[in-house]
Image (tube, one colour):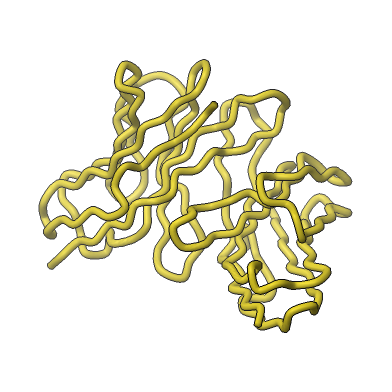
Length: 116
Length: 114
């Protein structure tokens, strides 16, 4: 079965330090992977995605993610965290099951807290 | 370009009442989705649509109905609300092009069922 796991419910980092939010996946075939961010009382916003090509994907707000096929991971990273990065982060993978349904399989989310 | 909009933003219902949540998108997207978000459970897909006039069940469809009479609108109905349907509801839409699948989300509707 296809799945996405975000092993950490919460990540705490100090402002200015690098941050990593982890995501691992299990899919058949080549994965389409996504990261979204949700600020308090807002809808989800697209950050970046990996479809094919370079394993390092750059996205919005200075975030990037590294696709690692051997470790089936797609960790979100940022070199220097800002307090304003504090939010809930979701990893997702496209459902490649039967049919053309374009559904995404979502992780449970990781709450990132950046401390001043 | 408003993107994805949802109405209402907040609603309180009594058990057994009915209501309809409206989602509208102005991006000419074929695909539309309704999710619910509950603490510790992430996003769960309720129903989705792959085009005007079509709907399909997601992972938690019971107690909900949907309609997609117009391409730009996707309605979510609760015929007889239950406290278990207290949640935040998000609508999303996406392109059909093979290499994309990015979903664009509305701001959400916070529903409380008493």
